Structure formats: C-alpha cells, structure tokens
Image (cartoon, rainbow, N blue to C red; front, side, top):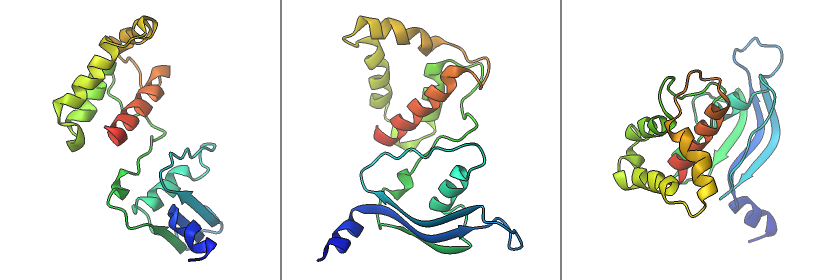
Length: 167
C-alpha cells in the first residue's frame, strides 16, 4: 500500500470536482469545490457568512440534494447517519425551559429514550464538583425562552447536538 492509499483510508468524506446548481440554467454555481477531504474521527466546524453555501453543502453530504457534477465519496460507515449540524434557524421551543427543551429533543430521539442518559444530564448539573459551575448553570436549566433569538439559544442548540451525537 502506498502513501496515497494510506491517506485515502483516513478520510471519511472526499469531495472531488463538485459543482452544484439549484437549476440547470443558473449562470454561476451555488457551490464549486475542486477537492475537499474530511478525515475520520474529527469534529468539523463549517463556518462562513450567510449565503455562502454551508447548508447547501451539508444537504449534499446528507443526500438531500444531488450534485450537478462531481463526486462525493463517503466511506461505507454504519454511523454515517450521525452527521449532524446546527441550522441557522433555532430548533428550540419558545416559552419552554432549557431542561425541557433538551428533554423534548431527547424524547423523540431513539438513542435518548433511555432515561439513564437524561438522568446523567440532570446529575451532572446537580452534583458537579465545582459549586461555581453549578451556581452558574443551574439557573439556566429552569430559564424560560421568550425568543428564539436569545443568546443562550445557540448554546442550547449546540449542547443538544453534542448530546445527541455522543450519548
């Protein structure tokens, strides 16, 4: 096996000569990627300004959209459905506490039905060794969201995503 073959095996996702247009007569590409390699066992952040194609790329990776041309190769991995992302719009419930937002997300997610995992979340905050941490975060558990645009909502969406992926 040569060095290129070894490198190739370390990539979970490889994109080559990808072009995506929302409609055939579109003048410019919505996305154009000559080459992109995403390694295995990495948490990747996809950052860019609004309208730069982040959501479109994720929809291509998840198979919701088909490339106009080029290839997206995803290793034959049984956990590929665990590709997750936080959308620009919040997916939290307004007028509901932080804890209940996490619980409602968990309740409908088969990996989380096990009450032990929800108990872990509660125990972590209740019994953390750092009293300063507990006093800092416990008030947020009962905080009621008045607006999806609140500062904590982005943090909550990220927290829910991490819990869904790793617990």
